[in-house]
Image (cartoon, rainbow, N blue to C red; front, top):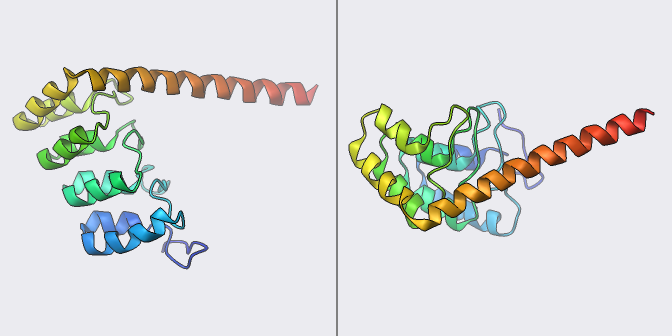
Length: 173
């Protein structure tokens, strides 16, 4: 059972609503998200570090994906294995979801922990229309900017981790 947040709403309510594709309920919850009473990027650490956007993308609920992006969902959020929402949609052949991600300038070229991009995942599963869309998106300049930003974020995380480890070592002395 989900924990109850300070607002009296279950912490993972957005995840459940998006997995079901309940856009009416999602629009109602949007007010809580906008008032920052509900975290649109809450990670479910008991389910592979998925966020609501992963669920909506996996299940092919394009309208939920669009609403989540409008509410500030992070399209670069990575679940276990390094998959983004684009990887989830590519695996299941959710063309409409990928189209919305591309139209909203979400990064669709970020590799997972194995080095596979969403396009490669779509190729593996034989979703040719998804492959074509992702190939076209990869050729755009916006996607190259996302790749640079992702590398910068990764390096920043590494530096922060090293600084934290150094601080702990200094505190012991």
